[in-house]
Figure 1 (tube, helix red, strand yellow):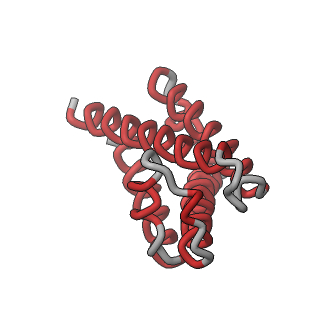
Figure 2 (cartoon, one colour):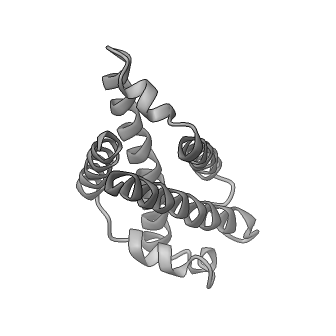
Length: 145
């Protein structure tokens, strides 16, 4: 019972992260005078986050992570690629926030994006690695319980 509640909480947190991140990148993409709105990194980030959103929603109802996790050879690779997937999303958001901060692209920040921008503008590569590893371990450990 307790494991199922934690699993639901983690899935909800991941869905909320996907929603907030999609809003952040979509707002950057909408702004016409923002120099980074046309970058491929923004579009790739939106696609990766939307795919993670869909997989997480499906996993709430059909435990595909459990199924893939228990397959020999595939399970460990799936966990590894899931961690890489989380890292890439964090890296894209961090690098865009750093570009906005370093080049003083204040026109790229709106009221909707200010909170996420302030959260990620000082992240480093090491922070993203640790966060993705921690989240992946926590996610799949909770899935086991």
